[in-house]
Length: 250
Picture (tube, rainbow, N blue to C red):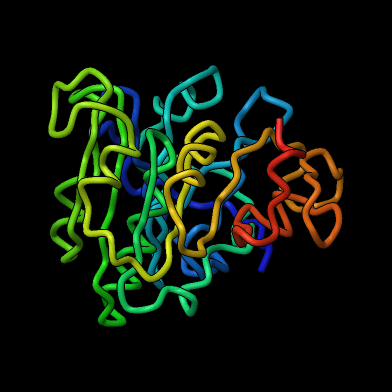
């Protein structure tokens, strides 16, 4: 459910090379599923910044973001006690009812944050959760220990081989147990194309896209699916693998 509120920053800190965490106080946030996102308003910038939600409970929610431009750099400098205007409860999120007993969670780089709440939810349901994560190097790795602490099995690859398995996220997938019932993934399109080639099970993809409004009014982030044009911000960002027309994706 879309909500707009001003939230107080409880903490804002860096956990990896370009990755920061912002914890916001507030119960009325409308998040109900892993994989939803927030849209943050920043002073002096016209468009809000869509940010993945890493975790939430009844009292607060946690945004995890990569510092890649002036907006996220501005966010990274904000201090505890400051306030920020945020649209919350955005997106459809992952459907945990489709997971089966042995779900595989796949993410690369800045696609890792929503995997935390997803893994937590699935573990709490008694599912045997396995994660395959891909990063560029050891200094980019994050959430590894937190996911393990939940009880998930985690396989990590780094492109330069400075940590764990040398290679891409597909190499981490290959190292993981293969008897998976369903998969969930978040990351860039090239990663999705590679995942599609090696996985035979059904799954859900969370798409990254530049957004205008973030709640479906401007139609700026539309994509064609087998059931017609869909807005990534409102109808997505999560889509079943059976809905996707890969030839339509650029």
